[in-house]
Image (cartoon, rainbow, N blue to C red; front, top):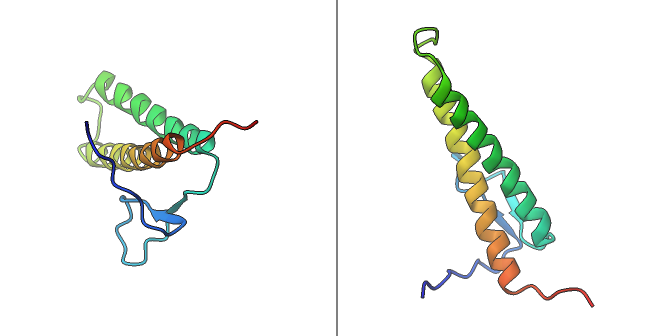
Length: 99
């Protein structure tokens, strides 16, 4: 069975897609895990839709600069979605249903 890494004691977890030293984009780990999960689903759905567009794209009509732009957007959406899923999963494993 895979062991999950515990998050640091800090309430705010930086997104791995941050490319700066100060990590301005964070996940509030105290947020309702269902809301975190919904944010993850939104990003992964957008990533999936963009991937489908890329798959269907006719490269004869595309600019050569379009591909790096699309793959960069896919990376950010997918990485952020994955980070959000990790937090939601960790929170839901310790989450107790409201009474």
